[in-house]
Length: 422
Image (tube, rainbow, N blue to C red; front, side, top):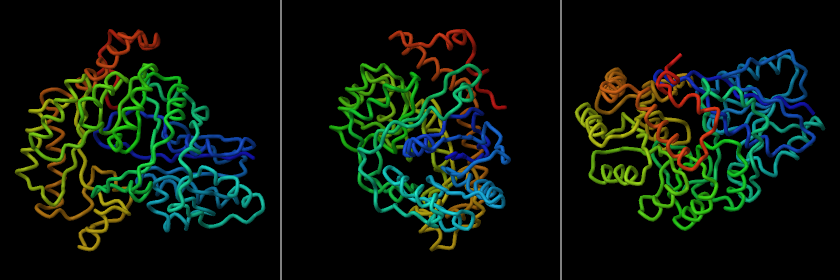
């Protein structure tokens, strides 16, 4: 069976550097398919779709809300040709009802142990409109190594610089943050993979640089420390979402190769200042993730927040505006208050204001987003800050002899030249 798996194109954010990471959802899904399925993967961000190619079945994997309209258009074109289409992925789960209008089937939830039945239904002409497993999650031990072999690796080296590979060590999140849909997508229970299986996958990735995509590693201290201990001999260099703010955990993370973290900065408290300092004291860089437009925000405290970010010397900062994605507390509250201004999903890119802010106009919040980017990077451009962060990982790799020869030719160049926007 020839199964064409497509990752729809999506528009980069206005300030986003133009490189592409290998997508995680499709390679994790591909690992759930039986051996008799011949998977042909297309990342439309980097490859053109050959709609004339003969295929038996098409799968469309959507991660982001800004992918859904393109995903629907792709499906419509295949279905006009009589080719069956199934959708899956995070954005499919968030937009299931609308997606069903463009699909022969939608798959909601985690696919491990489930695809044999779906494919049997397909072969028998009995494909169900919806396979809903959102509240029936498989045993986390069933998660196997992702099928990175379906990727064209050449596409994910940016101007000779080796990009990170994505991997996950857990699913679910015990937190239920206001703007986040993870508690809906993966459940409120933290579900760590068996450490031996997670370590085996990490060790088997032919890339020294990784992004551990778990929503937060700071959920179970014992598990987190055991994971880091087992990672130390691998000498990988990695970034992640928050690490637990305990000296013993941060020390192990640094030994395990922590390169930098994405850390939400939500106020100007001494706690945040000290939290960033503790990362830096352990040699771990910090990219602050800054969400603007919460109901507690007004123009003055947004400007004070930007000044604070410069004071605490973040390595990088990424600014977004509150975006009420379906199945979040933000969506429920703003919808109830009739403050959602558009449901054109192409605008749900986290850099466009799609709701009515409480303390300012929609237009003013959009202006303040630009102000935040311009002010934070006015003295030192984003490309220079990125270069410094890249140099940090190169130093770590050279110290333990894991610096790849293919990057060695770049060590004398300005990394800023390599990451300028195209």
